[in-house]
Image 1 (cartoon, rainbow, N blue to C red):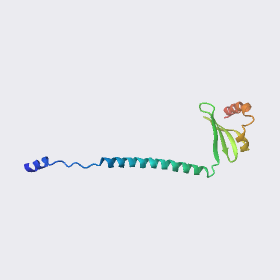
Image 2 (image 1 turned 180 degrees about the vertical axis):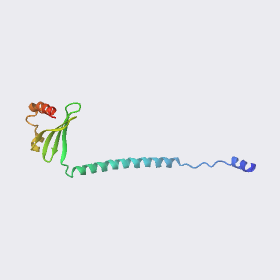
Image 3 (image 1 turned 60 degrees about the vertical axis):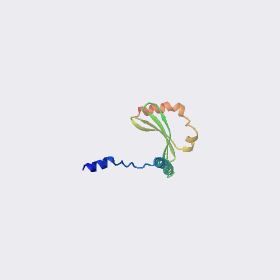
Image 4 (image 1 turned 120 degrees about the vertical axis):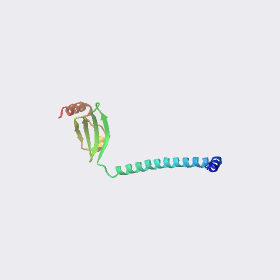
Length: 127
């Protein structure tokens, strides 16, 4: 047993041969592959989102405007009509419906400066 212990102690430990250059190349190629997968996923995501918008969504938010800390106005396109909605803690209220969508898109409503305060006051009073 003494002889066996002596032979094991005196035998040089076999060090594994590590190819440092090959390992660096493998790590760099793996990182490039991951980056390529991330870019491909982003491209595919944009393509799918663009395609889903072309299928004919009937409601589209044109613009939002914050009136207070928790109140906001929404301008929506829905089935050829433009709707002005007030949203607040009490819920949603339709403030105005524009029948002709093209007239509302190019020019602001005629009574927007004079009637806005009145519309907002009526919206806050409604239950």
